[in-house]
Image (tube, rainbow, N blue to C red; front, side):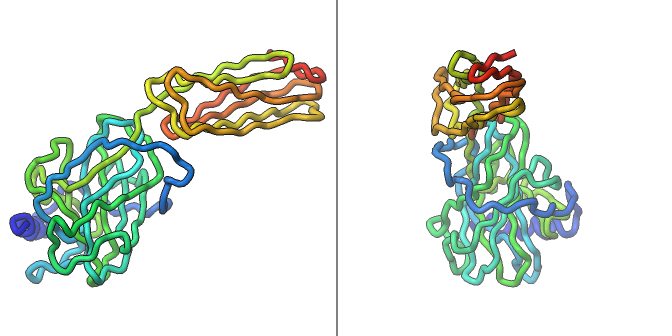
Length: 313
């Protein structure tokens, strides 16, 4: 731990005096989410991680040996799952910490935020001075799920407000324990970035889901049209929802249908029935389907309604 802090001090001085390897200002938050687990039933899976603790460094406004800096940290990583659901860092906070800890996900270190979330100080354990490993906790940053490209580099950017005595502790390892990324450090609110230690890593975990795929077909009979939604992928479709609508024509009676199921196993299917339709004329039958790990898809069909008979054209 002392070794890591010593290198941090040297790293700060190097970053402050020798330039940087990336430039750009923090992008303003488009939206701050509190929690996206409400209404979900899936259990996400561990994707990338580095859990070998070697020491901690302060995150936020700090003073090392008379050298003041507002430290921000970015950990790069390469996901292997298509959906990124949340991340965790091994952290703690100072007793006087007053502002939230913010985490942003980016595909470019100085680019726009793909997701962002703010976690209040109350979620962190309090320490007095430099923490030991048993005083730290895995803090959950549960942003809205985002689609990512497996094999592509992304960044977890962690920072807080530049207010006196408002700082957190974030842990890591000074050796290359995670080969698919490394830690970057900023001392000027994200305007410039540089490597703290070559190939050093933060203690972090990312979670996600594998993408699956759905197929939609339509059937028509005397009792009205129906849609068949089938999981044609290799993984369960989680939190599947659908919205069926009928529009156009001169309809004296129609029934729009919405519904959901928590899980659709690979190879399984469900049937969405339109219900009773009465009227006449040309109509459009539409179905939109989405799931936690399925990109939204839709299908539209034109049909002719004659009284209660519906014919797809």
